[in-house]
Amino acid sequence: MTRHFLSFFCFTLLTTLSLFSCKWFGRSEKPVSINGKQDALDMMEMPPLPAGGTYAAEWKTIDSLEQEGLLRSALEKTEELQKRAADDKNGAQIVKCLLFRGKYTTLLEEDGLAVAMLMMETETGKLQQPEKSVMQSLLGEMYPKYHANKRWEISQRTPLSGDEGGDILTWSGARIARQASDLYAASVEQAELLRTVPVSRFSDVLYPGENDSIAGQPLRSSLYDLLAYRAIEYYSNDLNFLNEPVYEFILDQDFSFAPHGEFQDKVFDSRDGYSGKWRAIRLFQELLKAYNTDNQGDQTIRRARLYDADLARLQFVYANSVLDNKTDPADSGNAR
Image (cartoon, one colour):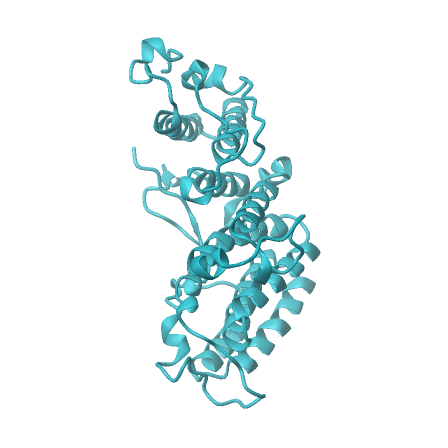
């Protein structure tokens, strides 16, 4: 079974801006271009926004300013709209405003991407739940993209002692990876609260993937589901964990293949608290526990969510287990 997830609307300029140098000179409202090449706005490759949403008139104004290249004015209008969204307690629109503030800041400032990420970190620290968890997840996604696009530059930096301070412009690759990992972990800490938040509350900044529903109901029905699967996707990618730890977590336990009701309560010890595999396993356990105890709603839909999560767990375990007998279910936990 192929798994499909809801995806966050997130600016993909992170994959392109490292190729260009972007500066804002003065307060002129002339259309902005990058290095004299085509208009910067043509290079954003932004995914389309979901149709509708609140503050439609305000966003139309912001979009018009952007299309005219008047990014400073677009930024100011976005900041004003964020204040209104905060007064209205409109969490989805607060997140959307922060994303667009990040976009415009990246284009307007020298070292704009780093400046934008610092701004978003600062703003995230001020947010209430569940918006804070959403932004933590989004920031967790941005750091590895930043690293991928600045890899050579980052590799030339002289490592600093301690936690390397608060300036991403001085961070090593390992420090950036730790930040991303911690942000994803923080995004799912408030599990009990996040399970009460339907993903539909953030429809203004979400768009559905393919085959992500059953009987018209989303497989990722709560915000916790969505954030947990986003974290698992990050933790499952070995490219995000290139540094060899002193005490590496090895997935060599027979019970990792056990039936979901047994697997969810097993103890996976690790001396490497930043192991992606270990963190992914623990999230799978949390998901399965929740689905196994869920007695609300249609039973068919509940089972579909459980089986989908369990299949994802077994695929992950099979891909990462070092057991010689992992191809034989009879000898590797009697998974079924």
